Length: 154
Image 1 (cartoon, rainbow, N blue to C red):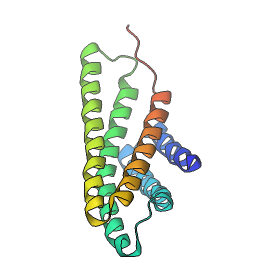
Image 2: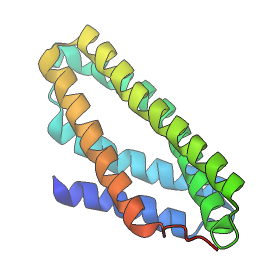
Image 3: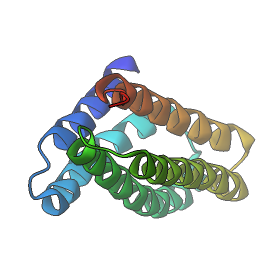
Image 4: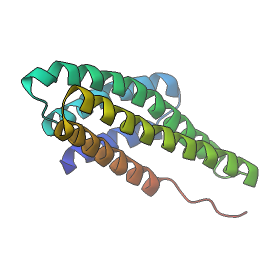
């Protein structure tokens, strides 16, 4: 499991490091990330044969929304990287508020889809979905925090 998460995190961070024309690269990275991530999810979440089609349809819907939030996260990280050396108190506050809002939206999305997955399957499959998504998200957040330098007062 850890090797999958590290691979996903590496893909995510590698794409962040090279975001010159970032819109196209974000789309490319998310396409690659989505494919690898889906394999990880398939190894962990085990819907029954009857639940399988409905689960993957919901999962694809979830991933579409998650990827939009991921694009926003990359844009915020890019903004931070560009402003890091000269960031004012006001810019730091505005940036942090956007990060907090995005984190709330991401967490709420997982909770929403937990309920949807439970509605088309059962508590076990929904919990598996919730666990793997939170595990991956937490690993990615930890990797990002390790890479992003702390602001220093000028």
